[in-house]
Amino acid sequence: MSLSLFDLTGKRALVTGATHGLGMAIAKGLAMAGAEIIVNDIDKAKLDAALADYKASGVKAHGYIFDVTDENAVKSTIAKIEKEVGAIDILVNNAGIIKRVPAAQMEVSDFAQVINIDLIGPFIMSKYVGQNMIKRKEGKIINMCSMMSELGRVTVSAYAAAKGGLKMLTRNLAAEWGEYNIQVNGIAPGYFATAQTGPIRENGHPFNELVMSRTPAGRWGEPEDLQGAAIFLASKGSNFVNGHILFVDGGMLATLGKTSAEMKASAE
Image 1 (cartoon, rainbow, N blue to C red):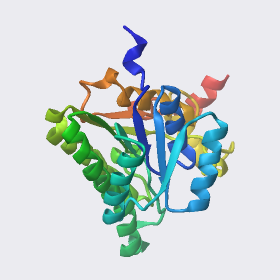
Image 2: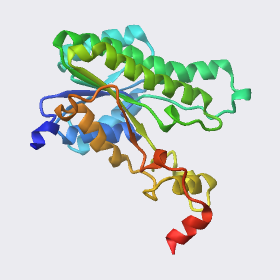
Image 3: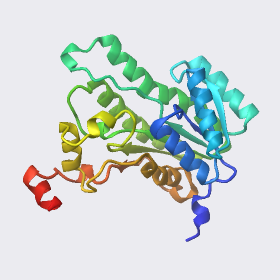
Image 4: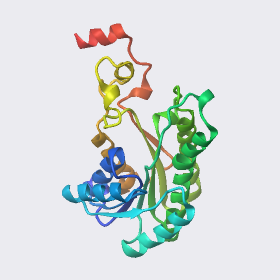
């Protein structure tokens, strides 16, 4: 097997919301494999700071300001990117939000906002990038799904509904666009060590104990743990993988987890 299967040299990858966190880690991973990176945000200051970070890391990145939920802005910006940078070979739908509110107390407007950004946004992006991929008869789309596309959890009803919908959008686009040599797949991350999860990763925090007890790997994921999955799904190595959701969760989905006694015994 040749490593050229995973070489992204000459490819252009648009990663939405890749100004920080997991999206930035994925974009840097694709860049390490040779891809030219395009990122977006709705905030110019965030975008400028991210572009400086990419440059300092030796990554060639282009930045565009637009909202993934604004169809007209997406349509015009995709056309602009294809004219100024070149054809978009890889799309990673990463931009998203979460609102942790019990369902009985959640405002319908907040529920709708999560659905709009986390589900309708990826549809709009896929529609306009996909139209060009169909013409070229080639392309890779990666949707950032979630453990919550498979499992429920308290206070995240809107997020889980959106990610469950994104899982099925992934499979439906794969069914529609497979004949055009377009592969549409999803990555479902487990729980990762980021700035946002810092407070709940402390020893003794109930959620940290839950993650540790449920994860056979015995640790939180590092953002870099997503890079291999993204490179695979963006590369020729996945040319016959379509409509698949790749869980990068340290094995969490495979087990009910350990009791506190079993965890204590493992540590001894």
